[in-house]
Length: 100
Image (cartoon, rainbow, N blue to C red):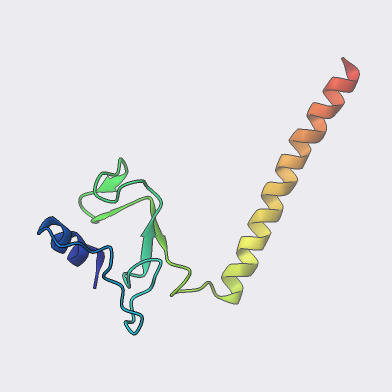
């Protein structure tokens, strides 16, 4: 069942809190849609694009669509770049305090 199906059923008054099927094939993270939202409400997003029908907060579900080895390696490289950049800022701040 997709998110839009769930929303439609909920708007019809159906209580979906107990609508979990252990034998079903829906992902517990994304409901089988293959993506999740980073925004608070997928129906009220500031970055929603009418033409595309998506928002910038949409992220691929890593539970049912895990990252490949190449994607994991790329993520690690990006984390290392960010850590290096942040460490340089911290070192510069520490040096500035010592000089003051």
